[in-house]
Image 1 (cartoon, helix red, strand yellow):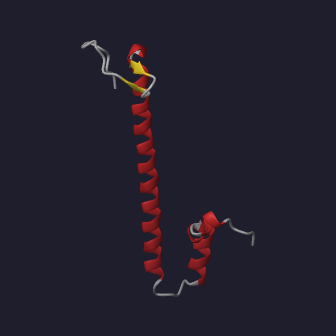
Image 2 (cartoon, one colour):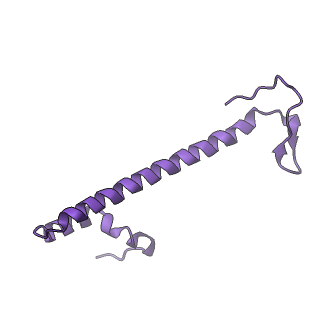
Image 3 (cartoon, one colour):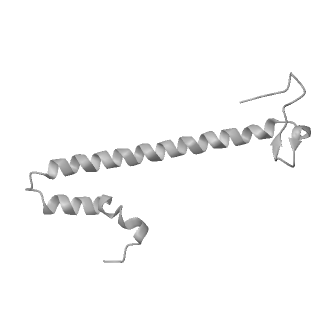
Length: 94
Protein backbone atom coordinates (compact mmCIF):
# COMPACT_ATOMS: atom_id res chain seq x y z
CA UNK A 1 0.00 0.00 0.00
CA UNK A 2 1.35 3.40 -0.96
CA UNK A 3 1.85 6.04 1.66
CA UNK A 4 -1.18 8.36 1.96
CA UNK A 5 -0.47 12.09 2.44
CA UNK A 6 -1.44 13.35 5.89
CA UNK A 7 -3.96 15.85 4.44
CA UNK A 8 -5.89 13.04 2.73
CA UNK A 9 -5.68 10.53 5.57
CA UNK A 10 -8.84 11.76 7.32
CA UNK A 11 -10.80 11.27 4.07
CA UNK A 12 -9.25 7.88 3.25
CA UNK A 13 -12.18 5.96 4.75
CA UNK A 14 -14.56 7.74 2.34
CA UNK A 15 -12.91 6.43 -0.83
CA UNK A 16 -15.24 4.16 -2.81
CA UNK A 17 -12.85 1.21 -2.90
CA UNK A 18 -12.28 1.46 0.86
CA UNK A 19 -16.04 1.62 1.50
CA UNK A 20 -16.62 -1.45 -0.67
CA UNK A 21 -13.83 -3.30 1.13
CA UNK A 22 -15.37 -2.57 4.53
CA UNK A 23 -18.88 -3.48 3.34
CA UNK A 24 -17.75 -6.86 2.01
CA UNK A 25 -15.61 -7.61 5.05
CA UNK A 26 -18.38 -6.84 7.56
CA UNK A 27 -21.49 -7.76 5.57
CA UNK A 28 -22.97 -9.79 8.45
CA UNK A 29 -22.57 -7.03 11.02
CA UNK A 30 -25.95 -5.63 12.18
CA UNK A 31 -24.44 -2.15 12.54
CA UNK A 32 -23.63 -2.00 8.84
CA UNK A 33 -26.87 -0.20 7.98
CA UNK A 34 -25.98 2.56 10.43
CA UNK A 35 -22.52 2.84 8.90
CA UNK A 36 -24.05 3.11 5.42
CA UNK A 37 -26.38 5.85 6.63
CA UNK A 38 -23.44 7.66 8.19
CA UNK A 39 -21.46 7.49 4.94
CA UNK A 40 -24.47 8.81 3.03
CA UNK A 41 -24.85 11.67 5.51
CA UNK A 42 -21.15 12.57 5.29
CA UNK A 43 -21.28 12.47 1.49
CA UNK A 44 -24.34 14.72 1.43
CA UNK A 45 -22.73 17.20 3.81
CA UNK A 46 -19.56 17.27 1.66
CA UNK A 47 -21.58 17.92 -1.52
CA UNK A 48 -23.60 20.69 0.16
CA UNK A 49 -20.45 22.30 1.53
CA UNK A 50 -18.83 22.23 -1.91
CA UNK A 51 -21.96 23.74 -3.46
CA UNK A 52 -22.07 26.50 -0.83
CA UNK A 53 -18.41 27.31 -1.41
CA UNK A 54 -18.96 27.58 -5.17
CA UNK A 55 -21.93 29.89 -4.58
CA UNK A 56 -19.86 32.07 -2.25
CA UNK A 57 -17.03 32.36 -4.78
CA UNK A 58 -19.52 33.18 -7.53
CA UNK A 59 -21.04 35.94 -5.39
CA UNK A 60 -17.61 37.39 -4.62
CA UNK A 61 -16.70 37.38 -8.30
CA UNK A 62 -19.97 39.05 -9.22
CA UNK A 63 -19.31 41.82 -6.69
CA UNK A 64 -15.73 42.21 -7.92
CA UNK A 65 -16.87 42.56 -11.53
CA UNK A 66 -19.19 45.41 -10.52
CA UNK A 67 -16.06 47.55 -10.07
CA UNK A 68 -15.46 47.49 -13.83
CA UNK A 69 -18.74 49.32 -14.46
CA UNK A 70 -17.70 52.34 -12.43
CA UNK A 71 -16.10 55.52 -13.73
CA UNK A 72 -12.33 55.67 -13.48
CA UNK A 73 -12.58 59.30 -12.33
CA UNK A 74 -14.32 58.11 -9.15
CA UNK A 75 -11.42 55.83 -8.18
CA UNK A 76 -9.39 56.90 -5.16
CA UNK A 77 -5.89 55.35 -5.40
CA UNK A 78 -5.07 56.05 -1.76
CA UNK A 79 -7.94 54.03 -0.33
CA UNK A 80 -8.24 51.80 -3.41
CA UNK A 81 -12.00 52.33 -3.41
CA UNK A 82 -14.51 54.23 -5.48
CA UNK A 83 -16.04 57.49 -4.35
CA UNK A 84 -19.79 57.84 -4.77
CA UNK A 85 -20.62 58.99 -8.26
CA UNK A 86 -21.55 62.66 -8.71
CA UNK A 87 -23.78 61.75 -11.62
CA UNK A 88 -27.24 60.70 -10.34
CA UNK A 89 -27.93 58.92 -13.63
CA UNK A 90 -24.74 56.81 -13.41
CA UNK A 91 -24.96 53.25 -14.60
CA UNK A 92 -25.16 50.91 -11.59
CA UNK A 93 -25.60 47.58 -13.34
CA UNK A 94 -25.82 44.17 -11.68
